[in-house]
Image 1 (cartoon, rainbow, N blue to C red):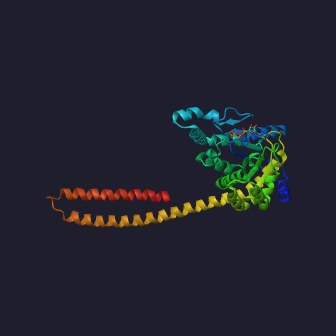
Image 2: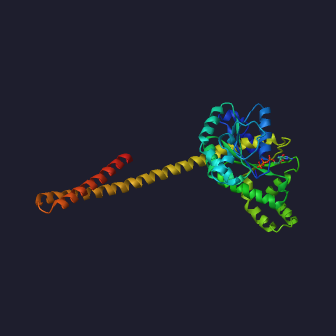
Image 3: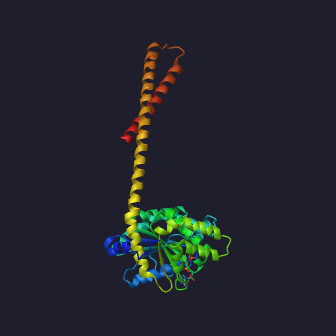
Length: 359
Ligand SMILES: Nc1nc2c(ncn2[C@@H]2O[C@H](COP(=O)(O)OP(=O)(O)OP(=O)(O)O)[C@@H](O)[C@H]2O)c(=O)[nH]1
């Protein structure tokens, strides 16, 4: 398991973030309802302000009553969640999904605003709805995360309620969810074990580092899910190795510096792993498109040649016909032939235009 204090990563992040990147680092804050996302964003915003590094804050939760931090862009200014529910006859979750989808259609404007601020903004923070699946498994969530990932160094911050995770089963469920989000969004990932002012997150670090310690905890837990947790934990071993975990208290601000170091390390990962992979995929897509175009071009050429043969045949036939035609009883046949010639002429014309497009 990697922590922000790893010497290799620390060496790579000696240079301050702002000097390496002109664009802000985008933090997408996700987490189960009640994990403390909003309090975390509030604390983070306050601490960054104190450091004279005011973040650009975007609220993506259309259903929240109030936002307890200074917000630069608020989804509620663009979409009226209650109106959406009424207009489309939706329940609360459907209303949130549809509101986020409507907002995603205007996401290019958000990008423009962030770019405008890029000169003197280091960090942009996105607070997301409590119904985590609304963001992670919706089209709008993919659009937003992919757009950000393509333009700015983007990091997913997954907030976990440490107090509730002392139970191995809850801990395992949370980790499985984190793992599924990582594979869905494929962006650098930081786990924030929140509420460490109540319970230290050391037990979680130990469970992630040492499988036997987790197994002991599972043995103590009499839950009927214990066996499943044990085998899943082995599966998650690989996931733990690549993930950065920091303890944080959204109430006291403890863990702030460690979190910033983790963000810096995640940006290095974005540059060294995410960007090359992203470019590789784009290249593959471009190659596939070229191949498809070549295939269509060949097929077109084949059809075009066949048409030319057909028209030549009709032309020869009609020349003979016109030569031998007799005036009586031939009007319909003449009309048919003219019509046929016109049709083939149109096909050839359309194909000719298409060939010009190919070239
Ligand atoms: N002691 C303690 N309480 C916290 C901390 N972070 C959040 N809380 C409390 O946890 C509760 C939930 O916090 P929120 O910030 O509303 O959680 P959320 O994830 O935004 O919730 P949703 O908007 O429902 O998704 C609140 O009562 C907070 O005061 C923390 O670090 N320590």
